[in-house]
Image 1 (cartoon, rainbow, N blue to C red):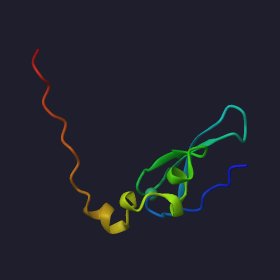
Image 2: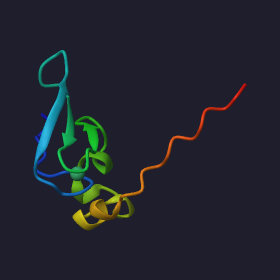
Image 3: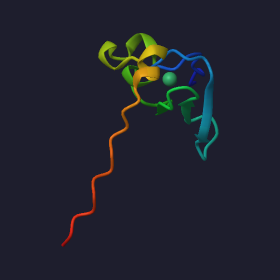
Image 4: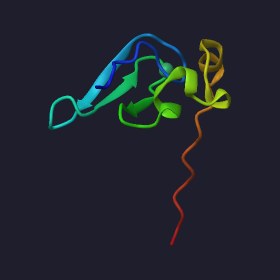
Length: 80
Ligand SMILES: [Zn+2]
């Protein structure tokens, strides 16, 4: 039913882990890329689950990941 993908839709990495599976076997899996941590459910549309249909503007390369050193800071708590 759901073919196991061979590459990450976002970064094309070929090591894909499985985080969860449906209570009824074979309905869906939640998969995660072991490089960029992109996570998706196998029942999501092709634009979220297949490299060839994933939007070009959101695709990542190893270079993109290496240069993505800026992690958004958590702002200070607001006083009430
Ligand atoms: Zn990835």
